[in-house]
Image 1 (cartoon, rainbow, N blue to C red):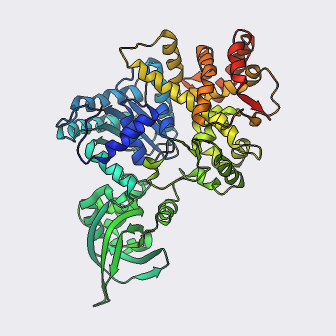
Image 2 (cartoon, helix red, strand yellow):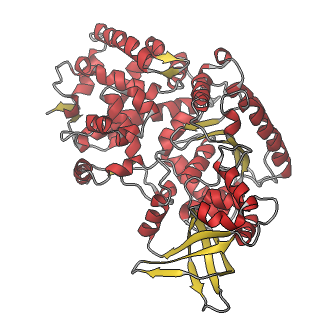
Image 3 (tube, rainbow, N blue to C red):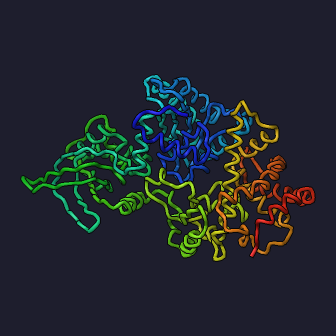
Length: 589
């Protein structure tokens, strides 16, 4: 039981999520990830980002997201008692984690970390990471001792990245995510606008548009007012912004450094050089024009587009020249769905909503209707909620990306399922291969329940590894070693799918017709898959050649999988009782 502080709402939400997914203490890091970035599937993220194997080199969580262009390294601590602060030595442990991840020879890394380190390094070298977050996540108050340690950690990270091509262009943020920060993130996820103060300024004039569900004014504000606003509220101003402020570096190619230079050297021209800002407000009031100016009073503010402009001006050492005018649009609405649209479409540079492009597809419309007849299953079909979705999603939800990954792995492409999940929705060819006119809700349950059960198996094995009272068997240790390799869950789905004719003892004209005989929930489907997963995991060492530096790749999978399928065929008589028991619950029509 974790320490509870009266009035702390994030802890209640965390307790529910831990219970729903049976997660370990390190899941507090995944919970923070989910709140900060609104991730699609907490269980999958936990499976892929929580390190394991018993030798994590002080790296509890490593999350790499090339689509968001971010990576997060986390050290996690969950106290069962209320204390004044978290132990600072665990923050300093992040120095060791950075050294192992970024500078040590890959061959010296433990298997559970090798694939993750290779994934991070490859993403950095490819220029796919713009922000690197280093977090010490815990459930206690923040402290100066921890902050001091994290300052050292940040310097270590800068030195480590300097040896990589383009590494100096990465913005590094070392943060203590303690009780108060988790509460703030929770409030941010639940509420789009978290800066609710009242502000007053003067503007030259304004154009106002009013519709039934919203109203808006377009005007300009002085740069020194924006500087003051950022100085007081910092990144809280970006609670509804999907990217936040990226920081600035002394580089001609860096747009934020360019914004700073323009603000300082050409303040009177800033208006024509800058696209401006869009901000959500709880309310606004424009005064009458007098002496060439109008008063503007706003209540609450969240900048949904223009975080780089605001952060660049706000982080100037001195307030800019009063001549600097920044174009801005204030929007006020009480309708949640409209606010979600404002947030989404004003962050058009962000590619993380790939599934949204298919939400109105006829196939997805049909599947959503079909899923109404599936027990304990809620299918999004490309539709996603807003910022609050991170904490409101039901445990019965089948997240769009994970569904796509399960179908891709089952139907022959585990590498894309592992490494390019957005392509499954944005690339026309990839999408049409997994979502066809014959794809049914019950087939999705068949594939998704397999992947989900594998993910849950990995987390349960990891939890058992840490339980000294019930030590793992050697077979469980080998299974966990396999599942700790990057992409292993999708590879396992793939080889099981490739073995289905042997398992069922009959030809399968089209795998898309496979489903459970009864109309059951994904959770019930997972139970049916367990004997097959057990059998495959017992042979998983035969798949070691599918990995290069503990990550799956197209070439290695193409070489190793046919040999593994041949092995399953040769052992079919031995495993016939298991196969026949499974086959009774599966139909093809």
